[in-house]
Structure formats: C-alpha cells, structure tokens
Length: 296
Image (cartoon, rainbow, N blue to C red; front, side):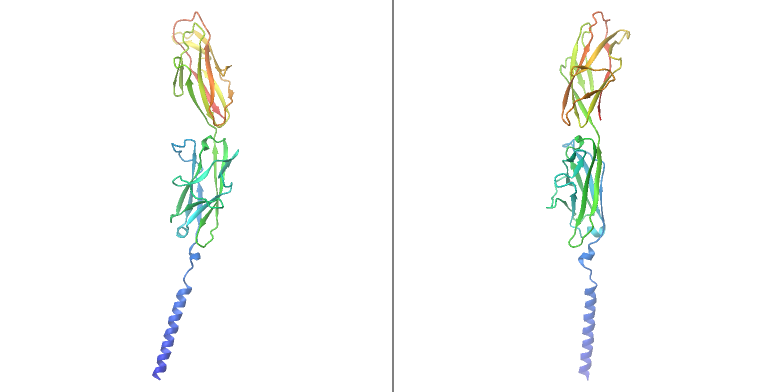
C-alpha cells in the first residue's frame, strides 16, 4: 500500500513539472515578432556648404530615423533611386551626374538591384549625402530625385518608405577682368581704372572680360556722366568717349546679349576710345561707369 502511494505522488509531480515546462515554451516570442517598428526618411532641400576641393558641387543631406524597437534588429538601409542605376537626380535637361555617399562622403556599396546599402551599426539615425559634383553649374530649373527606402531585417518585412529630394538651381554669372596693357589699365578685383592718357589726341584702351554662366547673359553699361569725361576742377569742360564690346559700340543703359558657352569661359574684349580735343582745358578728367552682367 505504501508503495502504491509513492507511485501516485511521483506521477503527479512528473505531470506538474511537464506542464510547467510546456507553458514556458509556448509563451516564448519569436524573433520575427520582435523585429517591428517604424522609420522615417527626410531630405534637406537646401544644399550644405561646399567642400573647398569641390567648389561647384552640391551636397544635400538625407536622414533615416529608426524607432528604438526597429533599430535593435535592422542590419542595413537600402536606398533605391527610381530614376535608374547611373544617376539619382534629374532636371530640365534629364539626368545629371549624381550619387549617394555615406555620412563621411565616401562611396557606398550597391546591390544587384541598384540600391545603395548603408549599414546601421545599431544606430537609430543614419545620415547620408546626395552628391551632385557640378550641381552649381547645372542648367537653371527644378530638380528632383525619388527614392524607395527599405530596412534590412533577419526575417520581418517592413513596409518601404518613399521619399523625394526637391530643389532648384538658379541662374548665375561670374566674371573676371584681365588687362591687355597694365600700363594703362589697372585691375583690383571688380574695380578697374582706365588711364586714357593725353586727351588732346585719340586714344584706345582694351580689357578682357572673361564670363562663366549656366544661363543666358546680358551686359549693360551705365555712365555717371552720360558718356563724357568731365574735368574734375571745372565740370563745364567735357570730352566724349565711346565704349565697345567685340568692336560693337555700346549704348549706355541698353543691354547687349552675350553669346556665352554653357559652363565654359567666354572672353569678350571691351574697348574705350576718347574723342581727340586738341584745345582741351588743362586738368584731370573722370567718369565712373558701371558694367552689369545679368544671368537669366
């Protein structure tokens, strides 16, 4: 009788122990259930400061932000441009040279489908760059890049996020001045002093204007004294002079349209020629002229 009681007790204990283990196993969550959450993607639509080594480049920062739960199980970020494999940004003239770089501005790996792969390294915020090497010199207008951004997890499928970069490039014009004869023409930045010499005889002075632009350009000249060199001491004495560009005489206040090559340097010769006045009053004669270059 005692032996039978012992057997029953042992059976009950074994049953209870087995039941306890089964509960513990059933309640264990799977790895797939653990990897869940949300993420966002943002692009800065204003270009970041350019590098000294790439003065014409545009840099737009992108950011992927993972929530805390998702960051613990995501291995990498995939950024796939919808514009195709070669270039990620397009504008008025089609695709332009562009790519995605790491936060250190280094090249990143791409998978066979063309997506850029950014490792997360356990971080919640992953930064990257959209790099356009010659962006500042691109044709003026609106530009955009469309991207499908996905997170790489061991098992779970997280819905991708669609994000766009949008920005505009404005017309620009740059110019520098070179003196053909430094004896008569002095250049200091954008200030130029032209010495016409003895005004009792006709004199001609030339300088070169080197223009670079991504757009159409027009040039205007305006004279403080309406095209006259005026005696500094006695303003009633005036000597007329003419201004020309590429041999064509310019009218003060009237624009002339320049035939510039896109993003290449175009050289234009500007000439100054006074009318000879043999009986000109003694003294120094001056005029101040403004030359304006307008990109449009």
